[in-house]
Amino acid sequence: MIELSVLDLLPHREAMLLVDRVYLDGQTAVGQKKFTGEEWFFKGHYPGDPIVPGVILCEVLGQSACGLFQEQLDGKLPYFTGLDKVKFHHPVRPGDEITTRVEFYRRMGNIYFLKAEGHVADTKVVSGQLSFAIVDR
Image (cartoon, rainbow, N blue to C red):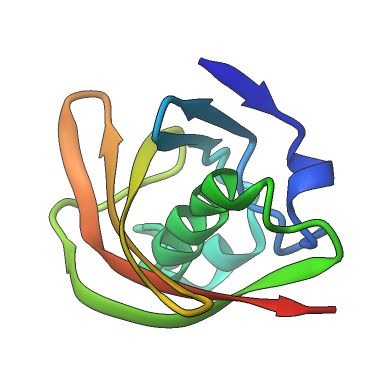
């Protein structure tokens, strides 16, 4: 497994740089994010019973997926073009560390289609299909 530089790989920065680490494991991108409880979204989602919003979990999957595009991203940007069949299987809470696995399954022109899952320990917490366009900056 090869660790990639998150800051070199992704255009995101504070407060939307969400992944802590991204690895390339053969044809699979693996991401990790530890939710500390200090993240901005916990203030309102939900006070007294904080859980990670589903849209944030989708963004973590998407940022992890960029590991698959590292060679295509020179001078280009990855744009999310779609989410399909996304399911939230279990809540993610402060203190949890999610590990994501994303695999390529189809390409149409500059659109890439991927399958993704996220787990906290052995529990699947999110799954779905993602699509991205690789576009000029």
